[in-house]
Length: 303
Image (cartoon, rainbow, N blue to C red; front, side):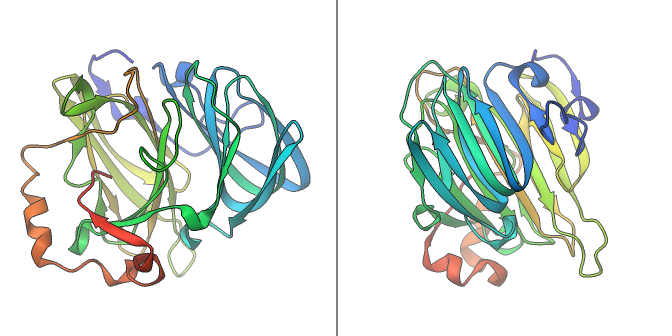
């Protein structure tokens, strides 16, 4: 995507707006107008199966709700999955490039992808091995599930993680960017896929996402996001993501870029970086403390 002025209606993709070819969400590099990152979601009824040709992309199969089996040749990995994205981390399967993979099961699944020409093996990562971080503090507290990040799972280019933001909190705050290659920052395209919990009364949930202009180009995104919406971040300062009171927020982040090194280095927005200093005197939101905290570390990361 070129570094011209980009408005929110070009980058906010409401639920169902990219459905095609049997996918509920289909965001390829050509759909996004960029070069590397992709996201697909699909639904399987009981007993259904789907063939996934990876072509020139490496992918993770991520159960969003439900469970299944992923097969490549004579190897099959059983994904226990979960009841939904707010239920905790999930096991995942890594799919290599130029493969024909079959997914069988019942539920909703995501395919996070990145273009690469590097061949890595078909692999499985159990949910129990997913590092869970509690980031920020106070109303900037959030939980990050690092199933596919640098140093956790080896890929050629693909970086992926999940973020839970309790209702009323902000994540991706301070705003940050990764659109300039260099020693302190990586150049990465990013996809935010959202699921928003309904209210206790069952009414639909809402949240908000912001992306603003950086040296890489003019961009202006301030959008209300609803369940299963997607936001593209080709460049720019992105954040905060705001979970409206009464509605917990989930986002699945997918990143990839042109650099020869797989790295996730960020720069904080200079007007918001001070926020990190306030966290030392605040507690992590108690709604995130418990079973997750036993498996977590605390880090002042970007998501």
